[in-house]
Image (tube, rainbow, N blue to C red; front, side):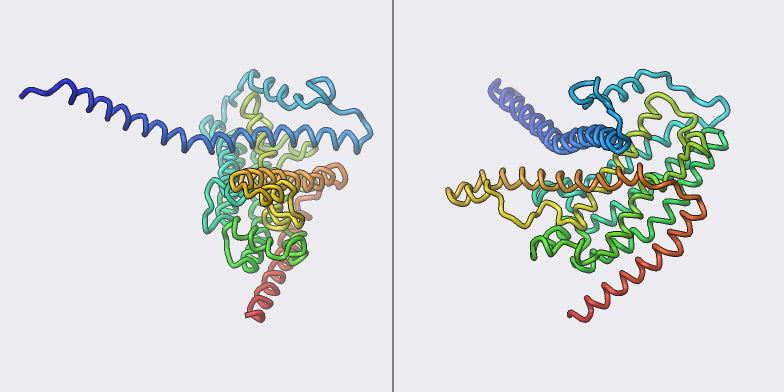
Length: 365
């Protein structure tokens, strides 16, 4: 059988094109994920710098000033130092659990970013159960902390892990009930739909005004979920040395450090999405007005997306002032006070808020 050379060349070129399409498809899937990871990394560095500057201002001291202009590279310098430090394993601990724990804590929080919309067209995956995915995935993080505490073979670490698990169970229930009330108002569990439902009435349509009790409960519960003061009992320095982080060093200690700020950022983003109207604002943007005037649809879409991202981030970072200020204002609670606050106060209040919201929704039908 004689095959023409041109036929062979055509077959080879076809296979090359198909393989190129496959590689292009894989790259096209990875680009938004890598962009989001890069954005999250920059966001965490900004939060660390902001916290140091705000805490310095509250305590009337200078704060970071040598690493880069205004000390903006201080967090990067700390991360580089931890990256090159020795990684020590406990001799009598469970090394597998000890090594896996920090990774589980970070990965579970990173997955939550997949359902956060920065604009109507800018969300990694707009799922019908977006907010519930965040709650379910974020509840995996304390399992990583418990594994780290148990694998360290240290009583302080184990106590810190147990506290983290107890605190997570305690405050996740009021948090979930507040999210349920929001989903009842929006008739959806999708984060994009929740933002769109708030945009109908402008500034006064934000869920902050429609759910003030739910907002306060959500704020307290999210602080407890992030283990921020006054709820930082899993890593209380005066009692537990450093809690579940006691035996860690090097990059694994750095992962816990990153996880805490990732959790703080994702909580602030969800406050923006659920209560502060997301990317919407009550006034029109001059860029969109110019685009409408000249009928530049492409420019309108690009400017709209850019401004949507900007508004979401501005709201998020303005809200971050609250947890950062609370950290340097309120003293730490005792463990019994923390559990009493969750079970005896926040749980009944969030249940009552959900029942009221359900009643109003039924009456409005």
